[in-house]
Amino acid sequence: MCISTASFTDIGARRLQAYDLTVLSVIISAVFFTRRRSMELMSKKRVLVAGAGGFIGGHLVRRLKAEGFWVRGADIKRHEFGDTGADEFLLGDLTDVNNARATVDGVEEVYQLAADMGGAGYIFTGAHDSSVMHDSAMINLHILEEGRKAGVKKFFYSSSACMYPEYNQLDPDNPKCSEDSAYPAAPDSEYGWEKLFSERLYFAYHRNYKVDVRVARFHNIFGTLGTWRGGKEKAPAAMCRKIAEAPDGGEIEIWGDGKQTRSFLIVEECVEGIRRLMESDFTGPVNIGSEEMVTINKLAEMVMEIAGKKLKMKHIDGPLGVRGRNSDNKLIREKLGWEPHAPLHDGLAKTYAWISQQAEAAKLEPATK
Ligand code: NAD
Image (tube, rainbow, N blue to C red; front, top):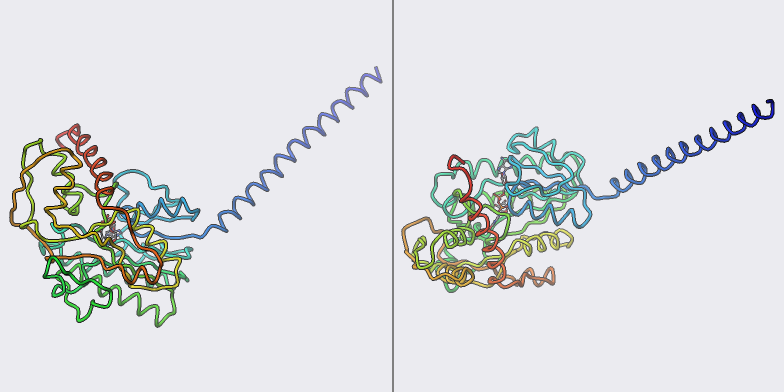
């Protein structure tokens, strides 16, 4: 009996020991896992993408996540086409200083892409001039000042080719958009004037507060997961939508005579340029755009060819912007040893496939939407 009792006690004690050891090892591995995880999180650079609910911002968040950054997104709206994978997303109006303060808290670097903007139908009618100037300027003022106070080390600012003077862009075949041609300033839109003001603001902070800045001037960025209807869409998206929606042999409307020229850059290359500039020691301003200049009529023909449709072009009055514009990539080649190189045709094919799919799906939406 005694023996058997002793055996039971022994077995119980051994079981208890084994149980204790298992619990202990679970606790130890949990502690190590949590420590490793928090060290991993601490070692990841923490960055903010302001405008993460938008077209380029959404693509940039995905790229930064793929590179291993801890990313906070901020925007007044969520991304229209799904989750971008940001570690944190703050929904709020960045013209409000309290929201701006919350977004820059604890981040090392800021990518500032939030702006009230859209295509020619939004920027060149004059109907949105006050909010384009007020909201975008307020966002930049708050993000910079609150970021500086919070100890942000580096800011990327997304300026635009719209800040170049109109007088250099009157000849559609020979527009001049080298970075040093910006002055005397004469942008043709309030959107361009705000970009010019904000560029100067970032450089003033760089000089006076020694914060690191990078400024890029984007030239007509296009691609998938961007606004393609509703009034804020830009030329390539609008063209893809019109052609996708038209029956073969039908007609599409084109603003102006279609002989105005532009260059268009696929968004993936824009994001590549942003990252390369951010990691370089060049502050900018520098153009991020394509040098493959086409007329708007040519753009329409390229999309028709991709779509396999023959359509008539009906030229109507509409907001146009400058007569000609092309990126000048001499400086980016020199400073970054890189420039965008993807052919326009490839980007259009990818974008048309996505927009025609969206347009097809939209036919099935309820009429009230
Ligand atoms: P977008 O409109 O898709 O993105 C801008 C984002 O800013 C939007 O999601 C919008 O909701 C957000 N925003 C606007 N007001 C806000 C507010 N008050 N608070 C918080 N968020 C606000 O535009 P995009 O094409 O992705 O452009 C990104 C940046 O690049 C902008 O600064 C734009 O001016 C600049 N840019 C774009 C192009 C282009 O061709 N797409 C060309 C030149 C410059």
